Image 1 (cartoon, rainbow, N blue to C red):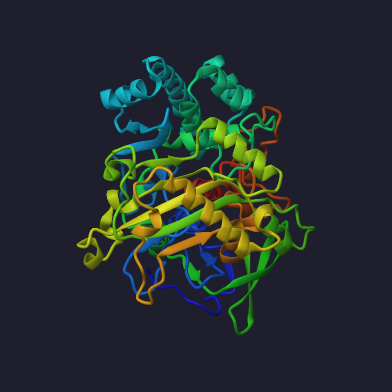
Image 2 (cartoon, rainbow, N blue to C red):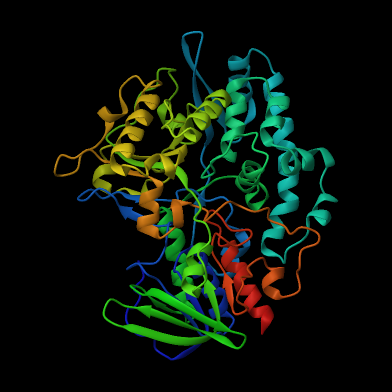
Length: 529
């Protein structure tokens, strides 16, 4: 990783101070530095990157896993071009594989990339006709048309719902934006497995029933399907840390000053500017600036501004990182190198998702936790050291849904252990051999399994409630009566303080690893000058 500095700043005043060195903060800093502004980035941790980092999770074994966030979809190609980023995002040859037991027989649903006859045949074998695949193509064709309208607006001043609605088929707009997505899925698809595969994109990091009237699940679904107009989730070569390392290089190359080990304790702001105070482990430092960009959750920003803290959001996920000596064999007979290359759905039939939600909402760890696996090293083995690559080892990532923080509050470690046990048991239902039997062991003989619950994410990354989006996602447009008078309002980054702007996942059009909030905050600053 590129070297940064700790300690006091080089000067007493900056045009902009960025609080938080995650990917959005680095993107904003790079844009502003390239525009000729003086910029200081302050990061609490000893390294930049936030949730988008690569690390050797298992000591003594050269495998750099994407420890928290793990795939890229929303990151605009425009941002990569603007900042001259050296970054490769690689397509997976499999979109998804869903193991299924039907009438006592193990089989599965394969969605290849590109789809083609192999995918059509898999739908046909599972459902008994071509109807399900035809409905699938029709639905995702409509979603893609919506994505091609919405995606370009992410890096533009906010448009309004009224203007966007005029460019989209009314039935599609109603299905995705106005009605609970569960109703639409139940109408459009009849097979429980197919319904579930569609629904899962609405539940990543979002705890909701598919029929939730708030439509929070619809918003999550939209964000997962619109990236660059295609919605494709790609693998960052070198791991997620390669994304933030490229952004850090871009910021430093633009003359940005980056300080790590700098825990910000206060932001004071008025109409003329702001002052930021931090501690470097030895003493406090302060600088003044024209603007502060807050690459922290809105509820954390409230604390820094001395305002009453907003209600803490609640994260909902179980993340497990594995290092395997071999990929496990599947009861369906599918090739593991194909099945695990894409998103491998476990217990994510539609009825299973809703049952797990009901159990979690009642305060119980789901009996059969829904989740999805994928193997980064099948697409990009650069994250492995040559000695374990030659042995045929692989990484495996599990992201479990319907695991709200409340389930772990009373006894986090015991509840985490039980959640992991149930997740493994549910995965094993589809394997010829227990997943644990495939685990590598570190030099001390410890199995290579690392689990993260919302409480871990909050502790490690200061994300309140362990919520990976800093709070529930918002529609990536403004209501038609919204005030869009200032640059900050027009770019969706305004806060209660005129000189303090959001530039993280809590901004409108935030969430996921995208750099969009950083881009938009930078444009708001430039527009205010």
